[in-house]
Length: 381
Image 1 (cartoon, helix red, strand yellow):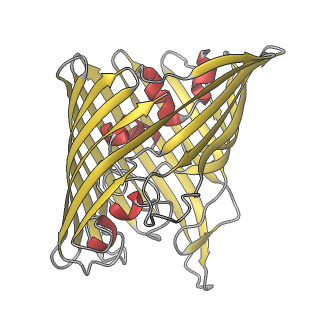
Image 2 (image 1 turned 60 degrees about the horizontal axis):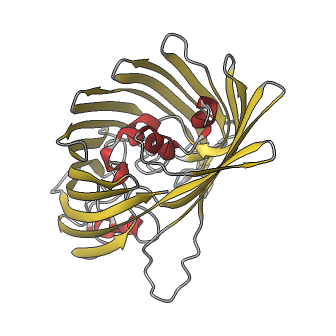
């Protein structure tokens, strides 16, 4: 595949290509080069939730979300990635590189043994147009730019992270989403990726505005942008995002402007890998844009990994999402710690075992704690 096609590929899938795990089938159809690949994963996840169960808001360690409304929960379901089929196409016409990507996802776990597991998760459906010296334009539905490096570098991308039963039953786990970084999201978009200039790149775009849990989207597009710098053994980045939220569904005049900034880096020094990512802003939300209203928050993710052998990687990650006092929310913070072991059994199969601890704290009173253990595997094809 050409480098221009890789830029357009499925975002987590691109990480797997870099890691040498993707095994997609490539074939020719007229002037088009087609590829077919994807991934399937499942994890046995056991969680226990204790402490204060009266915290109002997205308390990820509470029983309502962390343990599916009970003290303990068991799920055999997806990790941070869904099951997905990814179809790609590329060609060159009149000197322009053209590519297209379609990703169709599905979940493993449901709450019924006889109900139809028919929910389809289409996160990507876009095409790109560009040249090596001018960069490429993306048109369609894809992941966002803000927060992309955090989740792509999160070791729990190949595992579970937070053992959040409420999201695993029917979708995916959360990794460090809501306790370390805000989710990058999926949007209709018109975006641009520049060519590298002495290691510097620019990604920026206009995104279809989305509604929060209460306020409706404004009349203008969401804006996201990121500057990146690649250096020997690592990369650094800085990004921003903003969108207007107007009024609530009941008509109250509670509009605000979501705005956020981000700084981070990742580096590999021999067997040791390090990651740090910091986000700060207003209305970024815990799980999705604007889901906590106009509240201000800080997100921090720190991670260290060690390649014990060519096949076995150990990692320790810690993340925190902290709400600013005076935000009007009862929830003060979610933080989570994950220890993971990732063993590449075969070129296409990775075995994963993780231990996690998540804490949710209110501004007043005792907090809630969730402990989790997960074990399973992920296949790339």
